Amino acid sequence: MAIIVPLGAMWQRSLLPDSYDMAAMGYPDYGGGPGAGLPHGHAEGTPVTDLIDDPDRPPDVSETLTARAEGEVYTVNGTSPGPTIRATVGDMVEVTLINANVPDGATLHWHGMEVPNAMDGVAGVTQDAVLPGERFVYRFLADHAGTYWYHSHQISHEQVLRGLFGAIVVEPATVDAGVQDLVAVLHTYASGPQLNADSGTTTVAAQPGTPFRVRVINTDNGITPVWVTGTTYEVLAVDGYDITGPTPVDGLRFDVPAGGRVDLAITVPPGGARVDFAGATTLVLGEDPVDGAQMLSPKTAVDLLSYGTPADPGLDVSNADRHFTYRIGRRPGFLDGRPGLWWTINGHLYPDVPMFVVAEGDVVVFRIENTSGDPHPMHLHGHHGLVVSRNDETSTGSPWWTDSLEVGPGETFEVAFRADNPGLWMDHCHNLPHAVQGLVSHLMYAGVRSSFRVGGGGPHNQPE
Ligand code: C2O
Ligand code: CU
View 1: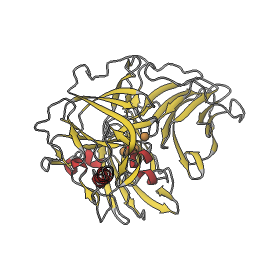
View 2: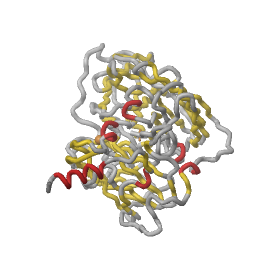
View 3: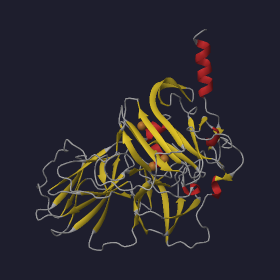
View 4: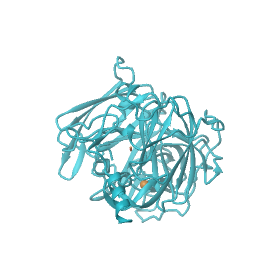
Protein backbone atom coordinates (compact mmCIF):
# COMPACT_ATOMS: atom_id res chain seq x y z
CA MET A 1 0.00 0.00 0.00
CA ALA A 2 2.82 2.34 0.89
CA ILE A 3 3.90 2.20 -2.75
CA ILE A 4 0.54 1.82 -4.42
CA VAL A 5 -1.13 4.82 -2.81
CA PRO A 6 1.47 7.43 -3.87
CA LEU A 7 1.67 5.87 -7.36
CA GLY A 8 -2.10 6.07 -7.65
CA ALA A 9 -1.98 9.72 -6.62
CA MET A 10 0.76 10.43 -9.17
CA TRP A 11 -1.27 8.70 -11.86
CA GLN A 12 -4.38 10.65 -10.90
CA ARG A 13 -2.54 13.99 -10.89
CA SER A 14 -1.06 13.34 -14.33
CA LEU A 15 -4.45 12.99 -16.02
CA LEU A 16 -5.25 15.88 -18.33
CA PRO A 17 -8.74 17.29 -18.05
CA ASP A 18 -10.96 16.86 -21.10
CA SER A 19 -10.28 20.46 -22.02
CA TYR A 20 -8.02 23.03 -20.42
CA ASP A 21 -6.80 26.60 -20.55
CA MET A 22 -3.10 26.55 -21.45
CA ALA A 23 -2.49 29.75 -19.48
CA ALA A 24 -3.75 28.13 -16.28
CA MET A 25 -1.59 25.00 -16.52
CA GLY A 26 1.50 24.31 -14.45
CA TYR A 27 2.95 26.85 -12.06
CA PRO A 28 4.13 30.43 -12.58
CA ASP A 29 7.86 31.19 -12.74
CA TYR A 30 8.62 34.92 -12.49
CA GLY A 31 12.35 34.55 -13.14
CA GLY A 32 13.30 36.68 -10.15
CA GLY A 33 11.26 39.59 -11.46
CA PRO A 34 8.18 41.07 -9.85
CA GLY A 35 5.42 38.51 -9.41
CA ALA A 36 2.72 40.53 -7.74
CA GLY A 37 0.42 42.08 -10.26
CA LEU A 38 1.40 39.45 -12.79
CA PRO A 39 -1.28 36.90 -12.04
CA HIS A 40 -1.00 33.59 -13.80
CA GLY A 41 -3.96 32.06 -15.57
CA HIS A 42 -5.95 35.20 -14.87
CA ALA A 43 -9.37 35.77 -16.31
CA GLU A 44 -8.88 39.47 -16.97
CA GLY A 45 -6.71 41.41 -19.36
CA THR A 46 -6.34 41.60 -23.12
CA PRO A 47 -7.63 38.45 -24.80
CA VAL A 48 -5.21 36.74 -27.20
CA THR A 49 -7.70 37.38 -30.03
CA ASP A 50 -7.17 41.16 -29.66
CA LEU A 51 -3.44 40.89 -30.36
CA ILE A 52 -3.47 41.64 -34.08
CA ASP A 53 -1.84 44.02 -36.59
CA ASP A 54 -3.68 47.03 -38.09
CA PRO A 55 -7.01 45.53 -39.25
CA ASP A 56 -7.76 48.43 -41.62
CA ARG A 57 -4.63 48.29 -43.71
CA PRO A 58 -5.18 46.61 -47.08
CA PRO A 59 -2.87 43.66 -47.74
CA ASP A 60 0.15 43.98 -50.05
CA VAL A 61 0.44 40.21 -50.48
CA SER A 62 -2.58 38.01 -50.45
CA GLU A 63 -2.67 34.24 -50.85
CA THR A 64 -5.13 31.42 -50.40
CA LEU A 65 -3.72 28.16 -49.11
CA THR A 66 -5.89 25.05 -49.23
CA ALA A 67 -4.91 22.18 -46.97
CA ARG A 68 -5.95 18.77 -48.20
CA ALA A 69 -5.54 15.17 -47.08
CA GLU A 70 -4.60 12.99 -50.04
CA GLY A 71 -4.32 9.49 -48.66
CA GLU A 72 -1.39 9.38 -46.28
CA VAL A 73 -0.04 12.81 -47.24
CA TYR A 74 -1.19 16.34 -46.68
CA THR A 75 -0.80 18.99 -49.35
CA VAL A 76 -1.10 22.77 -49.57
CA ASN A 77 -2.62 23.89 -52.89
CA GLY A 78 -2.01 20.37 -54.17
CA THR A 79 1.69 20.03 -53.38
CA SER A 80 4.05 19.48 -50.48
CA PRO A 81 5.87 21.68 -49.77
CA GLY A 82 3.07 24.16 -50.45
CA PRO A 83 3.74 27.32 -52.48
CA THR A 84 6.54 29.60 -51.34
CA ILE A 85 5.07 32.91 -50.21
CA ARG A 86 7.25 35.91 -51.09
CA ALA A 87 6.78 39.32 -49.49
CA THR A 88 8.89 42.45 -49.14
CA VAL A 89 9.79 43.78 -45.74
CA GLY A 90 7.06 46.16 -44.57
CA ASP A 91 4.31 44.34 -46.47
CA MET A 92 0.99 43.46 -44.91
CA VAL A 93 0.53 39.77 -45.64
CA GLU A 94 -2.90 38.16 -45.74
CA VAL A 95 -3.21 34.39 -46.06
CA THR A 96 -6.54 32.60 -46.11
CA LEU A 97 -6.27 29.00 -44.95
CA ILE A 98 -9.00 26.75 -46.29
CA ASN A 99 -9.27 23.26 -44.88
CA ALA A 100 -10.64 21.10 -47.70
CA ASN A 101 -10.76 17.79 -45.84
CA VAL A 102 -8.05 17.42 -43.17
CA PRO A 103 -10.17 15.44 -40.68
CA ASP A 104 -8.59 16.68 -37.43
CA GLY A 105 -8.56 20.31 -38.55
CA ALA A 106 -5.45 22.34 -39.37
CA THR A 107 -3.77 25.69 -38.69
CA LEU A 108 -0.82 27.65 -40.06
CA HIS A 109 2.00 28.68 -37.75
CA TRP A 110 4.58 31.14 -39.14
CA HIS A 111 7.73 29.55 -37.80
CA GLY A 112 10.32 32.18 -36.87
CA MET A 113 8.13 35.17 -37.76
CA GLU A 114 7.31 37.57 -34.98
CA VAL A 115 3.64 37.84 -35.89
CA PRO A 116 1.05 39.24 -33.46
CA ASN A 117 -0.07 36.54 -31.05
CA ALA A 118 -3.56 36.00 -32.50
CA MET A 119 -1.90 35.08 -35.84
CA ASP A 120 0.54 32.53 -34.40
CA GLY A 121 -1.56 29.60 -35.57
CA VAL A 122 -1.40 27.34 -32.53
CA ALA A 123 -4.57 25.26 -32.06
CA GLY A 124 -5.98 25.70 -28.58
CA VAL A 125 -3.60 28.53 -27.74
CA THR A 126 -4.11 31.28 -30.34
CA GLN A 127 -7.06 29.90 -32.36
CA ASP A 128 -9.32 26.91 -32.84
CA ALA A 129 -8.25 24.30 -35.35
CA VAL A 130 -9.83 25.04 -38.74
CA LEU A 131 -12.21 22.16 -39.43
CA PRO A 132 -12.97 20.69 -42.89
CA GLY A 133 -14.95 23.20 -44.93
CA GLU A 134 -13.87 26.12 -42.74
CA ARG A 135 -11.37 28.92 -43.25
CA PHE A 136 -9.21 31.28 -41.21
CA VAL A 137 -7.60 34.53 -42.34
CA TYR A 138 -4.07 35.30 -41.12
CA ARG A 139 -2.91 38.90 -41.32
CA PHE A 140 0.47 40.14 -40.23
CA LEU A 141 3.10 42.70 -41.01
CA ALA A 142 6.22 41.13 -42.50
CA ASP A 143 8.53 43.38 -40.49
CA HIS A 144 11.79 41.48 -40.75
CA ALA A 145 13.46 40.26 -43.96
CA GLY A 146 14.53 36.63 -43.85
CA THR A 147 13.81 32.96 -44.50
CA TYR A 148 10.90 31.42 -42.60
CA TRP A 149 8.38 28.64 -43.02
CA TYR A 150 4.78 27.88 -42.25
CA HIS A 151 3.31 24.64 -40.93
CA SER A 152 0.22 23.29 -39.26
CA HIS A 153 0.24 23.47 -35.47
CA GLN A 154 -2.67 21.09 -34.97
CA ILE A 155 -1.36 17.58 -34.21
CA SER A 156 1.85 19.00 -35.60
CA HIS A 157 3.96 15.88 -35.09
CA GLU A 158 1.76 14.12 -37.64
CA GLN A 159 0.64 16.94 -39.93
CA VAL A 160 4.13 18.41 -40.45
CA LEU A 161 5.66 14.98 -41.02
CA ARG A 162 3.04 14.23 -43.66
CA GLY A 163 3.55 17.46 -45.56
CA LEU A 164 1.41 20.32 -44.26
CA PHE A 165 4.00 23.07 -44.63
CA GLY A 166 5.76 25.47 -47.01
CA ALA A 167 8.28 28.32 -47.16
CA ILE A 168 7.80 32.06 -46.66
CA VAL A 169 10.52 34.48 -47.68
CA VAL A 170 10.55 38.14 -46.70
CA GLU A 171 12.83 40.03 -49.05
CA PRO A 172 14.71 43.18 -48.08
CA ALA A 173 13.57 46.53 -49.51
CA THR A 174 16.30 46.42 -52.15
CA VAL A 175 17.26 43.13 -53.77
CA ASP A 176 20.35 42.57 -55.87
CA ALA A 177 18.76 41.33 -59.09
CA GLY A 178 22.03 39.65 -60.08
CA VAL A 179 21.80 37.16 -57.24
CA GLN A 180 19.84 33.96 -57.90
CA ASP A 181 17.54 33.35 -54.95
CA LEU A 182 16.79 29.67 -54.31
CA VAL A 183 14.69 28.08 -51.59
CA ALA A 184 15.80 24.59 -50.52
CA VAL A 185 13.14 22.93 -48.40
CA LEU A 186 14.38 19.70 -46.84
CA HIS A 187 11.85 17.13 -45.72
CA THR A 188 11.85 13.41 -45.09
CA TYR A 189 8.59 11.95 -46.37
CA ALA A 190 7.49 8.34 -46.01
CA SER A 191 9.22 7.79 -49.38
CA GLY A 192 12.53 9.22 -48.11
CA PRO A 193 14.42 12.52 -47.94
CA GLN A 194 13.54 15.15 -50.53
CA LEU A 195 14.76 18.58 -51.60
CA ASN A 196 11.82 20.72 -52.77
CA ALA A 197 9.86 17.50 -53.30
CA ASP A 198 12.58 15.86 -55.41
CA SER A 199 14.75 12.97 -54.33
CA GLY A 200 18.38 12.54 -55.42
CA THR A 201 20.03 15.37 -57.34
CA THR A 202 18.49 18.66 -58.47
CA THR A 203 20.49 20.58 -61.05
CA VAL A 204 20.17 24.32 -61.61
CA ALA A 205 21.74 25.58 -64.83
CA ALA A 206 24.16 28.42 -64.10
CA GLN A 207 27.17 30.08 -65.70
CA PRO A 208 30.42 30.29 -63.71
CA GLY A 209 30.46 33.53 -61.76
CA THR A 210 26.73 33.46 -60.95
CA PRO A 211 26.07 34.31 -57.30
CA PHE A 212 23.40 32.32 -55.46
CA ARG A 213 21.60 32.78 -52.18
CA VAL A 214 20.43 29.33 -51.10
CA ARG A 215 17.80 29.47 -48.36
CA VAL A 216 17.91 26.11 -46.61
CA ILE A 217 14.90 25.18 -44.48
CA ASN A 218 14.99 22.08 -42.28
CA THR A 219 11.41 20.89 -41.76
CA ASP A 220 12.49 17.55 -40.25
CA ASN A 221 12.65 16.50 -36.62
CA GLY A 222 16.44 16.08 -36.55
CA ILE A 223 19.52 18.16 -37.26
CA THR A 224 20.67 18.16 -40.90
CA PRO A 225 24.26 18.70 -42.01
CA VAL A 226 24.78 20.78 -45.17
CA TRP A 227 28.06 21.19 -47.03
CA VAL A 228 29.40 22.64 -50.25
CA THR A 229 31.83 21.06 -52.71
CA GLY A 230 33.74 22.89 -55.46
CA THR A 231 34.05 26.27 -53.78
CA THR A 232 33.74 28.10 -50.46
CA TYR A 233 30.49 29.56 -49.08
CA GLU A 234 29.43 32.26 -46.67
CA VAL A 235 26.76 32.07 -43.98
CA LEU A 236 24.61 35.12 -44.73
CA ALA A 237 21.79 34.56 -42.27
CA VAL A 238 20.58 32.13 -39.62
CA ASP A 239 16.91 31.74 -38.68
CA GLY A 240 16.04 34.84 -40.73
CA TYR A 241 18.61 37.13 -39.09
CA ASP A 242 21.73 38.39 -40.89
CA ILE A 243 25.21 37.42 -39.75
CA THR A 244 27.58 40.39 -39.55
CA GLY A 245 30.92 40.03 -41.31
CA PRO A 246 30.50 36.54 -42.77
CA THR A 247 33.79 35.02 -43.92
CA PRO A 248 34.39 32.28 -46.51
CA VAL A 249 33.92 28.79 -45.13
CA ASP A 250 36.18 26.14 -46.60
CA GLY A 251 35.54 22.45 -46.05
CA LEU A 252 33.23 22.74 -43.04
CA ARG A 253 29.66 21.57 -42.80
CA PHE A 254 26.82 23.65 -41.42
CA ASP A 255 24.36 21.91 -39.11
CA VAL A 256 20.77 23.11 -39.49
CA PRO A 257 18.65 22.27 -36.43
CA ALA A 258 15.09 20.99 -36.78
CA GLY A 259 12.93 23.96 -37.74
CA GLY A 260 16.04 26.09 -38.41
CA ARG A 261 17.11 27.94 -41.55
CA VAL A 262 20.43 29.03 -43.01
CA ASP A 263 21.05 31.29 -46.02
CA LEU A 264 24.25 30.40 -47.88
CA ALA A 265 26.08 32.58 -50.42
CA ILE A 266 27.65 30.48 -53.13
CA THR A 267 29.25 31.83 -56.32
CA VAL A 268 29.50 29.22 -59.05
CA PRO A 269 33.17 28.51 -59.86
CA PRO A 270 34.32 27.41 -63.36
CA GLY A 271 33.92 23.70 -62.51
CA GLY A 272 30.51 24.12 -60.86
CA ALA A 273 29.43 23.75 -57.24
CA ARG A 274 27.20 21.40 -55.33
CA VAL A 275 25.44 21.43 -52.00
CA ASP A 276 24.87 18.16 -50.17
CA PHE A 277 22.15 17.74 -47.59
CA ALA A 278 22.86 14.95 -45.10
CA GLY A 279 24.27 12.83 -47.94
CA ALA A 280 20.67 12.21 -49.00
CA THR A 281 19.84 14.94 -51.52
CA THR A 282 22.05 17.18 -53.63
CA LEU A 283 21.76 20.56 -55.31
CA VAL A 284 24.10 21.09 -58.28
CA LEU A 285 24.77 24.67 -59.39
CA GLY A 286 26.08 24.58 -62.98
CA GLU A 287 28.28 21.51 -63.37
CA ASP A 288 28.74 18.84 -60.72
CA PRO A 289 32.37 19.38 -59.63
CA VAL A 290 32.72 15.71 -58.64
CA ASP A 291 30.60 14.14 -61.40
CA GLY A 292 27.95 12.51 -59.24
CA ALA A 293 30.39 11.01 -56.73
CA GLN A 294 29.05 10.33 -53.23
CA MET A 295 30.42 13.01 -50.88
CA LEU A 296 30.97 12.48 -47.18
CA SER A 297 30.05 15.05 -44.59
CA PRO A 298 33.02 17.14 -43.37
CA LYS A 299 34.03 16.24 -39.82
CA THR A 300 33.91 19.81 -38.48
CA ALA A 301 30.95 22.16 -38.40
CA VAL A 302 30.80 25.95 -38.54
CA ASP A 303 30.61 27.26 -34.97
CA LEU A 304 28.25 30.23 -34.77
CA LEU A 305 29.65 31.11 -31.35
CA SER A 306 32.73 32.53 -33.09
CA TYR A 307 31.69 32.97 -36.77
CA GLY A 308 31.46 36.50 -38.19
CA THR A 309 32.24 39.87 -36.62
CA PRO A 310 30.92 41.18 -33.30
CA ALA A 311 28.43 44.05 -33.51
CA ASP A 312 26.09 45.83 -31.15
CA PRO A 313 23.06 43.53 -30.86
CA GLY A 314 20.91 46.36 -29.50
CA LEU A 315 20.12 44.40 -26.34
CA ASP A 316 21.78 44.99 -22.97
CA VAL A 317 21.77 41.65 -21.20
CA SER A 318 23.90 42.76 -18.25
CA ASN A 319 20.84 44.14 -16.44
CA ALA A 320 18.18 41.64 -17.38
CA ASP A 321 14.79 41.94 -15.65
CA ARG A 322 14.24 38.20 -15.47
CA HIS A 323 16.44 35.11 -15.46
CA PHE A 324 14.76 31.81 -16.21
CA THR A 325 16.14 28.31 -16.17
CA TYR A 326 14.76 25.81 -18.69
CA ARG A 327 16.39 22.56 -17.60
CA ILE A 328 15.52 19.57 -19.72
CA GLY A 329 15.73 16.19 -18.02
CA ARG A 330 14.11 12.80 -18.18
CA ARG A 331 12.56 10.56 -15.58
CA PRO A 332 9.97 7.83 -15.13
CA GLY A 333 6.45 8.93 -14.33
CA PHE A 334 2.98 9.29 -15.77
CA LEU A 335 1.97 11.51 -18.67
CA ASP A 336 -1.80 11.75 -18.94
CA GLY A 337 -2.02 8.45 -17.09
CA ARG A 338 0.52 6.65 -19.28
CA PRO A 339 3.57 5.30 -17.48
CA GLY A 340 6.89 5.93 -19.24
CA LEU A 341 10.22 7.67 -19.26
CA TRP A 342 9.20 11.26 -19.95
CA TRP A 343 10.95 14.59 -20.55
CA THR A 344 11.00 16.97 -17.60
CA ILE A 345 11.30 20.74 -17.41
CA ASN A 346 13.00 21.91 -14.21
CA GLY A 347 12.25 18.47 -12.79
CA HIS A 348 8.52 18.64 -13.55
CA LEU A 349 6.42 16.55 -15.92
CA TYR A 350 3.86 18.06 -18.28
CA PRO A 351 1.40 19.63 -17.52
CA ASP A 352 2.90 20.56 -14.15
CA VAL A 353 5.64 22.56 -15.92
CA PRO A 354 6.69 26.19 -15.46
CA MET A 355 4.76 29.00 -17.12
CA PHE A 356 7.40 31.66 -17.72
CA VAL A 357 5.76 35.00 -16.90
CA VAL A 358 7.13 38.29 -18.26
CA ALA A 359 6.01 41.90 -18.50
CA GLU A 360 6.17 43.80 -21.77
CA GLY A 361 9.52 45.57 -22.13
CA ASP A 362 11.48 43.15 -19.94
CA VAL A 363 14.91 41.96 -20.95
CA VAL A 364 14.81 38.23 -20.35
CA VAL A 365 17.63 35.70 -20.07
CA PHE A 366 16.93 32.00 -20.43
CA ARG A 367 19.48 29.47 -19.27
CA ILE A 368 18.70 26.29 -21.20
CA GLU A 369 20.35 23.22 -19.69
CA ASN A 370 20.11 19.81 -21.24
CA THR A 371 20.67 16.97 -18.78
CA SER A 372 18.36 14.56 -20.63
CA GLY A 373 20.98 12.66 -22.65
CA ASP A 374 19.37 13.53 -26.01
CA PRO A 375 19.62 16.60 -28.25
CA HIS A 376 16.69 19.04 -28.34
CA PRO A 377 16.10 21.74 -30.99
CA MET A 378 14.40 24.38 -28.85
CA HIS A 379 11.92 26.79 -30.43
CA LEU A 380 10.36 29.84 -28.78
CA HIS A 381 7.43 31.31 -30.70
CA GLY A 382 7.11 35.02 -31.46
CA HIS A 383 10.67 36.06 -30.52
CA HIS A 384 14.29 35.65 -31.53
CA GLY A 385 16.83 34.95 -28.83
CA LEU A 386 20.38 36.26 -28.81
CA VAL A 387 22.90 33.56 -27.89
CA VAL A 388 24.93 35.00 -25.03
CA SER A 389 27.01 31.94 -24.16
CA ARG A 390 27.35 28.20 -24.62
CA ASN A 391 28.68 26.11 -21.74
CA ASP A 392 29.49 29.47 -20.10
CA GLU A 393 31.77 30.45 -22.98
CA THR A 394 30.72 33.89 -24.23
CA SER A 395 29.83 34.44 -27.88
CA THR A 396 32.65 36.20 -29.75
CA GLY A 397 31.33 36.20 -33.31
CA SER A 398 28.47 37.99 -35.03
CA PRO A 399 25.37 38.52 -32.93
CA TRP A 400 23.71 35.10 -33.20
CA TRP A 401 19.94 35.43 -33.19
CA THR A 402 18.00 32.20 -33.26
CA ASP A 403 14.51 30.76 -33.04
CA SER A 404 15.53 27.12 -33.45
CA LEU A 405 18.51 26.28 -31.28
CA GLU A 406 20.12 22.86 -31.11
CA VAL A 407 20.89 22.11 -27.47
CA GLY A 408 23.04 18.99 -27.38
CA PRO A 409 23.19 16.55 -24.49
CA GLY A 410 25.17 18.08 -21.63
CA GLU A 411 25.08 21.54 -23.20
CA THR A 412 23.99 24.79 -21.59
CA PHE A 413 23.02 27.92 -23.49
CA GLU A 414 22.20 31.40 -22.26
CA VAL A 415 19.79 33.12 -24.63
CA ALA A 416 18.40 36.65 -24.20
CA PHE A 417 15.51 38.53 -25.75
CA ARG A 418 13.37 41.58 -25.27
CA ALA A 419 9.77 40.86 -24.34
CA ASP A 420 8.24 43.04 -27.06
CA ASN A 421 5.46 40.85 -28.45
CA PRO A 422 2.65 40.39 -25.92
CA GLY A 423 0.81 37.10 -25.90
CA LEU A 424 0.84 33.48 -24.88
CA TRP A 425 3.69 31.77 -26.71
CA MET A 426 4.82 28.17 -26.96
CA ASP A 427 8.40 27.32 -26.00
CA HIS A 428 9.02 23.72 -27.04
CA CYS A 429 11.24 21.11 -28.61
CA HIS A 430 10.92 20.99 -32.41
CA ASN A 431 11.68 17.32 -32.52
CA LEU A 432 7.89 17.17 -32.62
CA PRO A 433 7.44 13.70 -31.10
CA HIS A 434 9.31 15.08 -28.06
CA ALA A 435 6.72 17.84 -27.78
CA VAL A 436 3.98 15.20 -27.69
CA GLN A 437 6.01 13.55 -24.92
CA GLY A 438 5.70 16.67 -22.80
CA LEU A 439 8.65 18.87 -23.81
CA VAL A 440 6.42 21.94 -24.03
CA SER A 441 6.24 25.06 -21.92
CA HIS A 442 4.84 28.55 -22.50
CA LEU A 443 5.86 32.18 -22.18
CA MET A 444 3.04 34.31 -20.80
CA TYR A 445 2.83 38.10 -20.79
CA ALA A 446 1.23 39.81 -17.83
CA GLY A 447 -2.05 41.43 -18.78
CA VAL A 448 -2.91 38.85 -21.44
CA ARG A 449 -5.60 36.22 -21.05
CA SER A 450 -6.24 33.18 -23.16
CA SER A 451 -9.10 32.88 -25.61
CA PHE A 452 -9.00 29.17 -26.45
CA ARG A 453 -8.78 25.75 -24.87
CA VAL A 454 -6.80 22.64 -25.66
CA GLY A 455 -8.88 19.48 -26.03
CA GLY A 456 -12.64 19.57 -25.80
CA GLY A 457 -15.28 18.78 -28.38
CA GLY A 458 -15.98 20.72 -31.60
CA PRO A 459 -12.49 21.46 -32.82
CA HIS A 460 -10.49 19.07 -30.68
CA ASN A 461 -7.46 21.33 -30.33
CA GLN A 462 -4.24 19.39 -29.97
CA PRO A 463 -1.28 21.64 -30.82
CA GLU A 464 1.48 19.07 -30.49
CU1 C2O B 1 7.59 25.26 -35.91
CU2 C2O B 1 5.67 25.44 -32.26
O1 C2O B 1 6.61 25.31 -34.11
CU1 CU C 1 13.52 17.22 -27.93
